[in-house]
Image 1 (cartoon, rainbow, N blue to C red):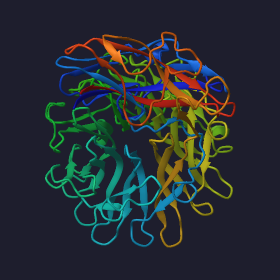
Image 2 (cartoon, rainbow, N blue to C red):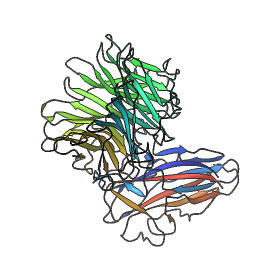
Image 3 (cartoon, helix red, strand yellow):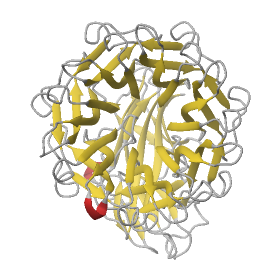
Image 4 (cartoon, helix red, strand yellow):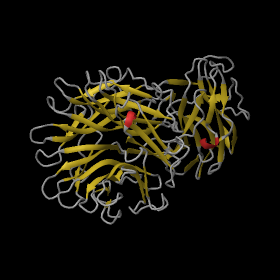
Length: 631
């Protein structure tokens, strides 16, 4: 059969949280409405099903109550040749059934009480994970570098874990892979990992190539089974020299464009006149440099005056192809010091002058010449840019987690924390809090992972904070919006460098921990459980007129130019009846066009949520997939 598919997230809030606009996830396309599998002659359009207009957002819902969305979700479907059927299912890799994102509780089904450590290097050789990505099937990939010793020295290394925290033996035989690139015992240090839509894995960092070029960008691609991909750069490995002579090029971030081209971003030591500069390269999917980008596929540029240091540390690609870079720039002087800097480029590598006037934005958060750094960047579906990192404020507060949000035009967003900038402490006293990675949940809340110096008997620990879309800490998460996790024995250091969203609504943080003993510093991961589920409505057995279990359902209000399979009801009343329909994992038929070649059939739907008296407050997400099928 021929089909077109589109996905919609239905969001609801219980009383503890206000209604919020929906958002996408870091590094992915917009998650409110996305199209996929566009084939043949069928058509589907969700443009009128607008969460921003309240069509699919329940707003505030009280326990032991039934609430129905007040505006139609109009789904247009049809076929230019033949009949078309409209189906709906609750499935898009984001979790089944309707789920509530994690509250910061460790997932007992992952490793040992939510914690896993992985030793790759022999003996006490160090294994340091710096990046993570989650596959649609819930498997978790951690990337970094490992001290393999012997002939290769430090190598790029990867581990893939099953959803239960065990190593995935379908990946490279035992779940781990090391990749030497530099000649001899030269260091190969991975800092970023990304997952292609076809399941292949990209990893990037910098490699000590010696000779005339010194440390260079290096990129490797492996297939889903953990073998080097020979269709990329000949043997799956690539190095790129940009700085003059043997000066250093250090890659810190990866981006994948919708067309499959690859962005490698970092900092390059360009010499006396400009010092360290932002730099990036764009590759074709086969690993060759894309000469349509900046002339030769590479681009370097300074921001700070003179030889001030400019470090690009994060990248995100907008749906329109423009490229957003974020990092830190040493502006010098007593007034600012290191500042957060954001750059937006056109797809061809030129500066986007619709952003902050010249494509470059700088601002500080810390007072005076404190150090402000954006270590990661994410994009909301509305085009707003979110950064996360740390700020060195000095005084009693010490180093703090720092975030900011910027409007698409390059101005700070005053609807976030009052002035677009947020700094907060997790560790007690002057303990250092360093934020390293950010992900945006489908409900718009932001997870930031890093390292917090908790002192006392545990030392530096993993820490994770969640921030509401208005820039306030989400007090439903952990303690006052933050969670700390001690993994290493005693005061051994635990550093979280990456965070990812799990398909069931949970989250995973990845980094490294000093486990001591026979293994030393190892990869370590912590998984946080999702906080609750709402079941599907079961007609005839679930009475919406009395308090009981919670249920989520859909109602077909009207249908035009099609025959309905569901029983329509023009008012979709908030009571039990045949007009309410379950939304299962497998697609169910809603309606079928009556005339072949009809492109304009419209199904107007509304959604209902009935909550039990004991339903946990919070924000729940239902990923719905509509499909137009040619039978």
